[in-house]
Image (cartoon, rainbow, N blue to C red; front, side, top):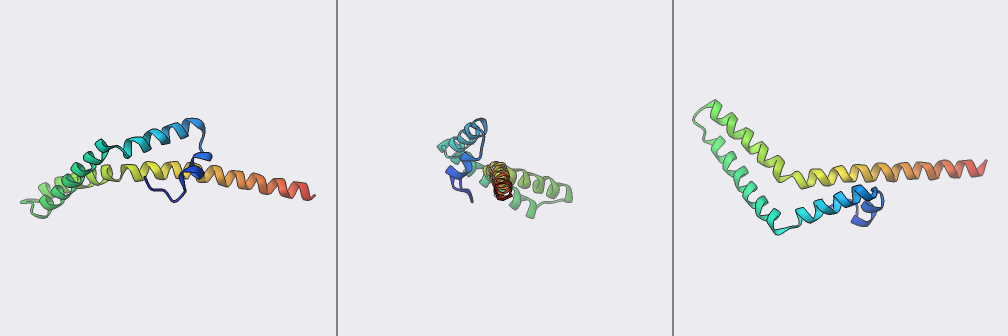
Length: 109
């Protein structure tokens, strides 16, 4: 999983429970089985897109577009979960910075 935060900075801003969950997701998303599932899901996404493009009716098109979007969401699941952990870690880091800033101001008075 790729992150705009390096893993160590991300983990230091998570609670132990959040860190354990992150590690479990990372292990899952890095597994061979997950990679096989992603290949399948990407193929299904492409198939749904192509089927939608050649649908015989508006209803068939809408069903295929819905399938495509569902597979797209699934394919991007790891990015979404990582983004949630990054938001949590960023919020903690920002709160810590604000606390340090208020301490600095208090010590100068």
